[in-house]
Amino acid sequence: MERLQGIAVSPGVAIGEALVMDHEGFRIPRRFLPRDAVEDELERLDQAILAATAEIERNRERVATQLGNQLAGIFAAHIQMLNDKVLRARLEEMVRKHHYSPEYAVSQAMRQWARVFQSVEGGRVAERANDVFDIEERLLRQLTGRRRQELAHINSEVLILAHNLTPSETANLNPKFVRGFATEIGGPGSHTAIVAEALGIPAVVGIRPFLTGVSGGERVIIDGDQGLVILQPDEETLAHYRFEVEEHRSLAAKLDKLRDLAAVTSDGVRIELLGNIEFPSEVEHCKDRGADGIGLYRTEFLFLAGDEQPTEEEQFAVYAAVAQSLKGQPVVMRTLDLGADKIPNLPFPEDERNPFLGLRSIRLALKYQGMFRMQLRAILRASTFGNIRIMFPLISTLLEFRQAKMVLADAMEDLEEEGVAFDRDMKVGMMVEVPSSVLLMDHFVEEADFFSIGTNDLIQYVLAVDRSNKDVASLYTAADPAVLRLINMAIRTANSRGVPISMCGQMSGNPLYTMLLLGLGLRSLSITPAAIPEVKQVCRQVSLKDCERVAERALRLESARDVRTYLKEELSKVAPEIPL
Ligand code: PEP
Ligand code: MG
Image 1 (cartoon, rainbow, N blue to C red):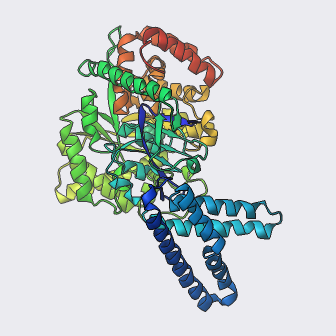
Image 2: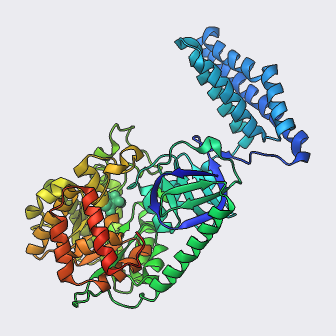
Image 3: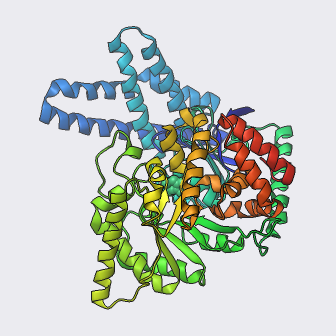
């Protein structure tokens, strides 16, 4: 049994069989073979060596004609290594004697070989290790054949263990079969983590490299509450976790009863609880959990799911269906928030050095106005089907907000000329997720119809800490006093001018912060649907007076640790049943 500590990003516990994806996205299959499969597997290995050799030979010929024989010599060396008799004998021994799968044998043998090269001092020989890795990858590609595209086609229950999963890969996972995942990299605020929560599957990210020690089919436990992955658990651990799974079920059943009750504090203040969604199918999750509407629809996921950019008609159909199914409840459609870690399959800017500080979000929309305008038209047309509000992401300057509104006004004018109906009084708001927007709140209150605080980005920008980087994950926390001060400023300014303000970052769905946020003056929270019952439970058990006392005290604390400890203490007094 081995316990691996990572970062807990999506709660719950899953027990099941591992599906392992390596760096290149290849599935690493089972480590051991059944006894009677040895001959067939050796034949498969030989075929793979032949195919890989032919592939290298083709490269060699091409390079020889274009650049000359000397450079093509690298490929000749690769062919020699690949067909080395000692290597072949070693692989055969591993398959015959130890019943290793050819893939596992190749990885083991090649890595031992690479290590020998790496241990030789002096650059030249050590560099040969890269050639060995190159050959290994080529051979594995021949053996496994399929890449990670097939993630969407998994049809038996698995837990995915991968080096990394992108937000769009995560978005394509089928939660019916993918019961949880764990990755070597990734941070607490990454969109991969957010999508895992939306899918309701336990997830752990930012574990150290561990994939070489595990193979497909092994039993694993993913503990999304504690951020643990347990490989080959013993019976005692399994029994403990089976009990945990039951506990989760019974708490969920208890909270389910809150569905039709309103989130009203003990002193009678009504709190609006909205849902955050990435996919239209989540509207049902919101209704099941008794949400008052949708406070954040991350529309860019429509652009991440497929290979093609969705047309205006396709977008219109989706947005109208979402609006209509909410039967008059509000839906805040956030316009495209692409870029940084959400890269669609579209012609996109060159690699950026600092993608979170680069051409992302509203900046990207304003640069590619054709795409932006098309989305705005689709949203406007859908607005006659329900209660739609529009929200621009990552606003950092007044000019940016005005420009976005101008593009919207243009789109409205076009529709008007075409005689197409839309809601002329649609409310237009903005995300507050860049510190500059908080500092300029007194100007923004003059121009925006509503605000939503995006703590996921606000935290990373105020603390200069990448939300998706595991190595700085301990700094990435909503409990930091600097973050609390910014949130306090934003709420105060908006409330003083009577402009509605909500919060849709992950912070708002964490019951640890509910008292604090109400005490700071929020009366509306937008949350991952799965978290609504717990937050509602807290709202119903606290008085606003207590919340204000908690907020006042929390604002005076010096460190994130102090804030967390204090909030835990206060929450356990009013809602001891909520697990933290
Ligand atoms: C945020 O930044 O808090 C937010 C809600 O937006 P996203 O997580 O999609 O960046
Ligand atoms: Mg954001």
